[in-house]
Image 1 (cartoon, rainbow, N blue to C red):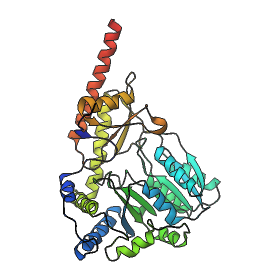
Image 2: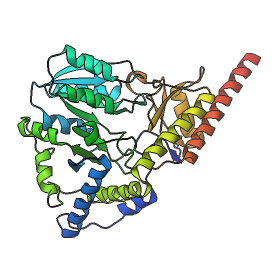
Image 3: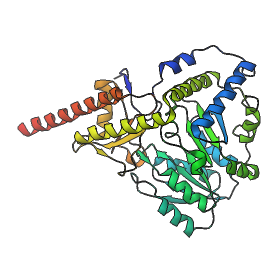
Image 4: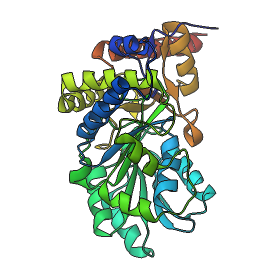
Length: 372
């Protein structure tokens, strides 16, 4: 049955604010013209401020997953040793990309739902031969766990390795102080907390990363950050710019600036806490380890007797609410509710009401079964 989605609560793509939709309708302009170059230069400078970095930020065609490959081919060389930290499906996917590129991946995994602890990272680094880079997913979308990036960054820096971060479902929604914390490269996707359609990967590069880029020996062409750096000086992209998506990102950045970046972080945190509280009273259990719950996506274990996949279908078919089920090894065990970007409590309140109705329906169904 085809149902019109009224409330998009998946973990991305996320709803588009009216200002972003309006920006997408603007006409095409010369992508090498003076006006558009000025827009790009301004956008890149403002993105630097939102990443809290004096380094470079680039906007590249692609979705968030492209960031895995962009990072590897620009920073490393075949045979380089990397420590890959895994606590969810997206960490596993990055692992597969690294293996395809012939890197020596030292994989350290913690159980899904748990966070990667700085003390564990320190121990893993101490017990292995020196690594070129540590690869970490800041916010593991598949489990609703936020890893303690700031503390892990300090450990990695002390070990002399580069810290490369998948921030796809984190940047613009979770706190990030790139330079202060010592993050060397972080990438994100336009379809998450940036409140834009899919199609852009935003890559922030620090000074230590540039030193690695200069020695990296993987062949690269379309993903070459050195070419992006050269083009950015004049407000260009190396190839034809995705003009409409850049319009959209510019509009979204204006919204973030108007609200205030710290206020955006606080809003995400407060909405997530309130949502977890209400759903816990309905009998749902947060899948993430306490103290490490994500502020952009919540993974919930349904009450006994309610199937996760059936609940996902019911929310869509009965209420027009789209949420995610579990993925990978968590399929059929959890539901995931996105609350990043353009989101208000009324959006989540509607989800809570629908979940309450489904719990009541399940209880009533069991009562009828007992009666028979």
